[in-house]
Image 1 (tube, rainbow, N blue to C red):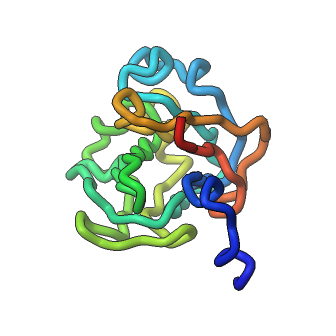
Image 2 (image 1 turned 180 degrees about the vertical axis):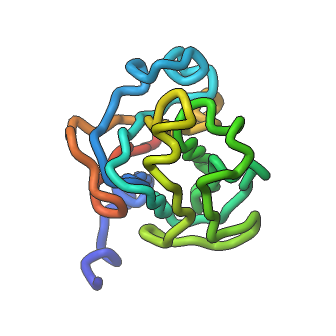
Length: 166
């Protein structure tokens, strides 16, 4: 714990965004949806989930939970905005198969449970279960975002994205 107090200032400017789910890491370019694979919403990465549990990838606050419960928006303490979008075309499920544990304004830390979802239900009723994790303000950010080379993600443990000052 004490060693964190003595980090160089350049290290403090880095934000590590951890995996919000367990599963296989997928490049955003390989997500079968142009909104994500063409990075219309921003830079990011995706996970093919192996279980239906989503945890916070950063320390920050919840800024959005749509009525359809299929996604969570988080603002990290440094202002980076992260969208976790469970599955594709899941807004059409109107919340069925999802249980959200947070609300807008809630403060969260890495590993705090945000939601649960029925993975089998999503696989059966949505077009895909792949879950994009997108930096929605990456286009006007003063940071560089580096994606992991890891193939497998462990929720709350694997660093998926490292953001550092340009």
